[in-house]
Image 1 (tube, helix red, strand yellow):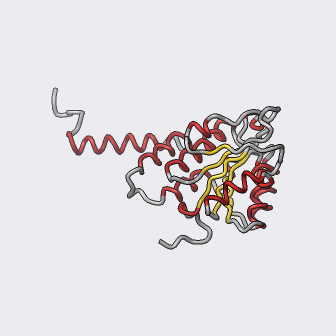
Image 2 (cartoon, one colour):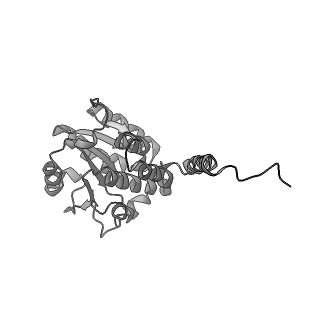
Image 3 (cartoon, one colour):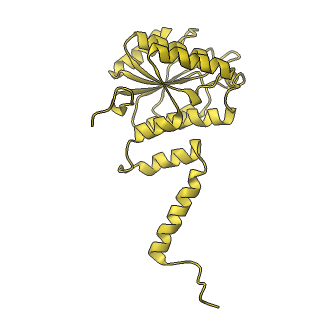
Amino acid sequence: MNIPENMIDPADAVMCLIDHQSGLFQLVRDIDQPALRRHAACLSRVSYLAKIPTFSTASVPDGPNGPLIPEIHDQNPDCVYIPRTGQINAWHNPAWVEAIEKTGRKTLIIAGTLTSVCMSFPTLSALADGYKVFCVVDASGNWSSMATDITIARITQAGAYPTDTYAVLAELMATWNRPDAWDFAQAMVDYIVPPYKALIESYDKAQQIQRDGKETKLNQQ
């Protein structure tokens, strides 16, 4: 299958989850914190389902930025944490770049808190080094909506592709004709669109009626 330049090829992708930390989350004003946590956890989960190399990192977690939220590694046991030595831009950490280079892949999916720093700085650096970058905006909280708008303009002008968590899930899933399709659907329900659960329940009930007949017998006393 020919995948367009402006879409994600799961076989060439690396998931980069940068600085989703409890302290930094206190600065976020452009998205509700519970939604941000769910979206970050979802990216970690779907990268595990899609067998995509995943790396996390944290900015001075021993200080006020706080620890990495546990959902990142709870949802992806294969996610590799790469500590850094004070660099604000994760791309300035040689260990981070080396880990990505070793995958041999050239497409990065990046989410980070704060958007205008932790997400955008590595994005700009990776683009300069020849990578294709997709920035997951709704998994990258920021201190103001204005700052997010400016950042999206900046990374887009540099050549990055802004996207959202649901789009990433759908691109990595690619087809319902796969044995783990309902694992992806469950991730949708758990982390992005909880109302989708009602659709699944209605579908399951319809299948049950087809199989076992109607539960309500209106023609009986």
